[in-house]
Every structure is written in structure tokens, then in C-alpha cells.
Amino acid sequence: MTLAEKILARHAGLASVKAGQIVMAKVDLAFGTDVTTALSVEVFHRMGAEKVFDTHKLALVNDHFVPAKDVQAAALSKAMREFAQEQGITNYFEVGRSGICHSLLPDKGLVFPGDLIVGADSHTCTYGALGAFATGIGSTDLACAWALGELWFRVPESIKVVVEGRFGPNVGAKDLILKLINILTVDGALYQALEFTGSSIRNMSMDGRITVCNMAIEAGAKTGLIAPDETTWDFIRGVNPARLISNPASLDLDSDPDAVYSQVVHIDLDSLTPLVAEPYLPSNVRPIKEVTGIKVDQVVIGSCTNGRLEDFQVAAAIMQDRPVHPGVRLLLIPATPQILIALIESGLAARFVKAGATLSPPTCGPCIGGHMGVLAKGEVGLFTTNRNFRGRNGHPESKVYLSGPQVAAATAVKGVIADPNEI
Image (cartoon, rainbow, N blue to C red; front, side, top):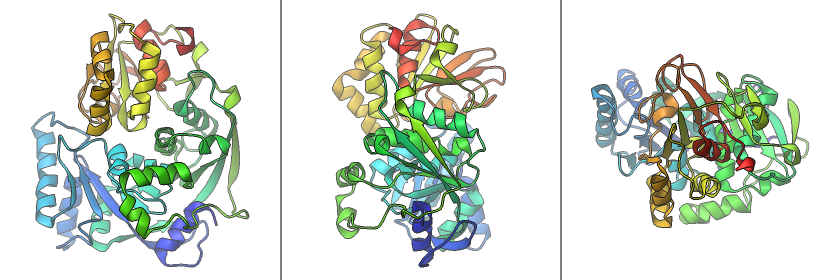
């Protein structure tokens, strides 16, 4: 079996499963956010449910429209807050103690290799970076998971992505996943699991793995997966050592040598250059040399894709002590309070602000066109987020280019899309 098949088989109580099979599987974590939970709560009560299946296996996260941008957003958070109190939910994360869910939940020790995780957010696939089968679901399905502790799944086919070679100067995990989406297109992995392997994946940091798995959905994938290794277990030791003791690392969490894949994709990092996705699809990927010089109004470094500490360290190394270009707004959005604290304590926050950047609290903000940096008509942005669909980040006539933090930092300094290797 593939890694995806092994996890689903284990949670379905079966010796084995195969692609296309329908299974009922028990979930380890079912979470919602401020924008998705209110509907789930309504459906939960309408279906006659009274108590959630396990108060410790739910998570409710304030992250999308927070701090509340208007009365409607405040009402959504209020509905989630009241449900958490009503049900006695252990893992409720209020503004100030919350962060973007896809960084917050792993850092809080709520994600473990081999887990089956569902969340009412499409980028739930991020948790595959830790070897969990994680996928997004709708708000009504989330209500069912809360009540029953299980859901049905069609076992997906898997695509093996073999990554070899070494990153060149100012090339990173975001460039890798943009390259793969360009190869597969936005529906090339529809309802399949992307399994990332190869020596380069093994050498990648956890922050880099989170970036890669986060954007699996942008190729249409059901989930993205990386088999756990020592990097994974080191991360787990730092966030949830108690669970590591009760679930030893000897678990068989890798694909079998005779596992069947729908296709195998090879990517050589040695030939990879900084990449940028043009509007209006993440698959519209171009080498940096083909898009340099395009004027931008706003640069965003952050989100669940590139809001980890490593991303800001990379950006700071590019910017050095250069100021933000006078024609550009630079927004920095750390994914969790802990990352924000690290930026402050390391002195990076002060360096960025002195350079002319704005430091935001953890929020999804402009990634979903919510607030904290939406674009006006005709404006152009370069974001380290995951989607650049028409109108997603602001006005339908605005444009967003996607890149890694290296290109974003260089662009913030230059005022136009810039190659970080040229500054």
C-alpha cells in the first residue's frame, strides 16, 4: 500500500484498502475556523446531535477575519465561541492566543504522524508535512464528524513526486511546489494524494515541508504527504513529547516498495530557479527572468504557506538594511503568536518596521481578501500566499503574483518584481 492507503486502512479498521474503495474511517482531529464553524454548529443541532464525539479531538480556531473586521465577522466568531463553551471544547483558540490554523495546530502538538485529520478549510492538506492524512471538507460534513467521530472516504490514488538535487541560491520550497503545480496543472492531481519523497525532501526543514504540502490542493490533490523521518520526530519531540511516548516512532509509516501509483513525477532542484505564478492561476508559473520589472503596489510575506519563522529569516537576509521602496506597501503576517514573538525577540520585527514594513497580527487577512491588506481596483500585488484567483485578494480587476519570500523581499526593495540574486 501507499502511505495514504495505510493511514486510511488503519482508521477504517481494515488490513488493507485500495484506490477507489469507499471506507468509513475514524478521525483523530476535526476542526473549524471562524468563517466555517457557524454553519457547522447550525447543522450539528439541526441533525439532532447533542454532544460532540470527543471534546479533545475538536479544534476551533479564530484566524480568517480576525481581529473581527465588521459586525458579521464578529457574529461568526461569537457563534464559534459559544459552541466551544457549550460543548466544553478543549482546543478553542481565541484571538491573541490563536494563529493561522495550519501553522497553529501542528505547533500546539495536535497533529501526529499517521493521524486522519479533517478540517473545514481546503488547505488542511498542510498537515501531511508531518505524515498525517489531512484533507479539507465542507461545513456540513464537519458537523457529521463532530457528532459521529468518523466520515466516509474514497481511497485516493497516489502520485509519487521524487525530488532530488539541491536548491540553488535564493530558491526554496515555494519554488518547488510552484514547479510541480505548473507540471500537473490545477486539476492534474484531482482527488489524488501527492506523496513527496526523495533525498531533497529528507533534507528539507519542517517549515519547508509545510510550504510544499500546503499547496497540494492547488493541483487538485486530496492531500499531500511526506513519510515521517527524524526531522518529523524531532519536531514532535518539541511540541508533544507525551504523545510520542504513547505512539512510538516504530509505526510502519512509509509506502511499500510494491505500492501502486497513478504516475511518478521527477523534479531536479539543481535546475530550478526562482519562480513566480502570474494571474490568475497558481499554475501560470514563469521563471523570474520573464517577469522582472513589473511594478507592484503591495507585497505580502506570510499566510499558512509562507508565514513560518524561516520565511521571515530568508526575507530579512535578502533585504539586509535596505528600505522598502516608497511606492510599495510591505505587509508581514506571522502565522502564530509564537512566530511573532520570535520576530520580536530576534530583532527582526524592529528591522522590518524600520525599513517601512507593517507587521500584522496572525490572520489570513489579504490571502482571502478578508481584510488587513485587500487590493483596490487596478492594483498589483506580489504575495507569498497560495492562490491568485481573480478577485480573491481584493477587487476583481486587481492582480496578484505568487512567489517565495526571496522574490517577495527583493520586490519590496525594488518596487518591481525582482530577482533576489540580482540585489
